[in-house]
Image 1 (cartoon, helix red, strand yellow):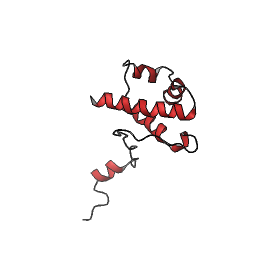
Image 2 (tube, helix red, strand yellow):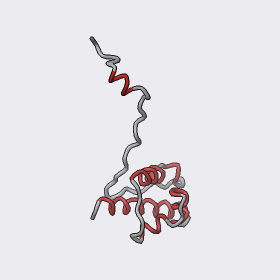
Image 3 (cartoon, one colour):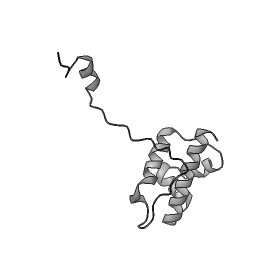
Image 4 (cartoon, rainbow, N blue to C red):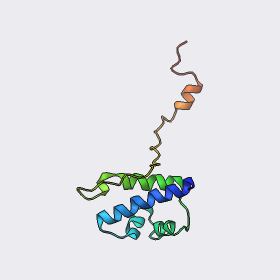
Length: 105
């Protein structure tokens, strides 16, 4: 299995579980997470692709317990690939490093 296929599999496991728990259609999960009704169905049928950014955003949305009905939790995936959110950097951090700011001299 390719890494991309594993990502799609994980995404579909999570999306289908969310749809079942919320008693909604997969197309509704797709619309809410992608803004595109057929996106998840297309992925399930080997059509289309997904960017890492969209995968990350969708998985973070689906893993948030606030998006699951009371008493339900997101499923454990066979192997999870959920990149952490990018840490926010100070705007001038690189410039400060280049200028030697904060160095003991």
